[in-house]
Length: 74
Image (cartoon, rainbow, N blue to C red; front, side, top):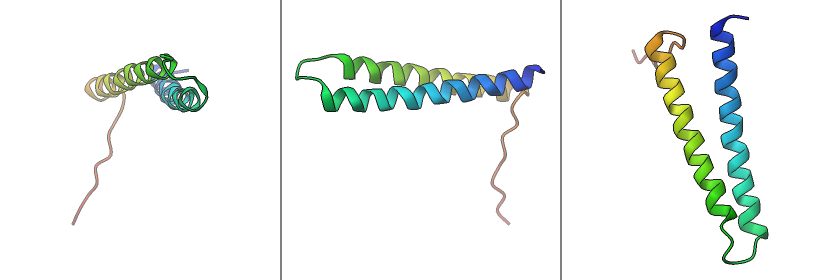
């Protein structure tokens, strides 16, 4: 496996973790009693993983591993 393939797999995994944390926060928000901090912690983790995802994408573009596709308007 090449480095590019592994890098893209890591990006997909981090994205799936972000989605999972969002769902977990929704579940905690609907089921927990008032005063529980589990929703806040799940959202905090989601924000942290989102920042990690953005940083990984920027590093990937900067190093040339990822190639962004522009929208071409004629």
